[in-house]
Length: 163
Image 1 (cartoon, helix red, strand yellow):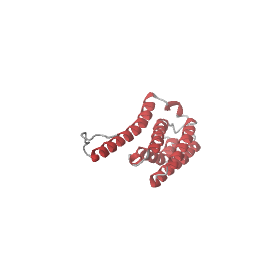
Image 2 (spheres, one colour):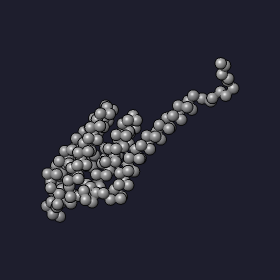
Image 3 (cartoon, one colour):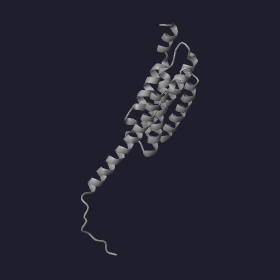
Image 4 (tube, one colour):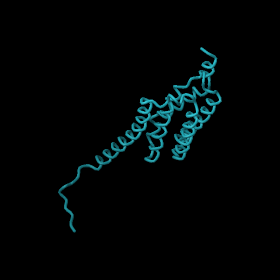
């Protein structure tokens, strides 16, 4: 291995990026989310999934390490906002996490790997991440609604309305 590959493999970005992927995939993130938060989570998942294609395409021998450090700092800020949201369910943290994701989009665009990031498979995965998040929220809402209706008991159809 070259010294650039060794430096890349030991860079703090590797662990931070892995944590960001794991955190955005965490199903608990959506579990107690309100409707407006679900859209923020879905968008965040879509962006990070998309960017993961660029991350996996990074060539350590042609990527400036100061760029990796900038990405690492922004990714860590995104993690901090997601963790803050998980702690207090304040939707403002998800908005901030999405702002950090916007910065990551720009930073990744400036890496040589961005040329390879837009593949049909990568786009499919990012869109799938978004729709899966929205779909799981809809399914959860449907199940809760059906459970509430079932708790009401049978409907009496023999009653009449007197005007």
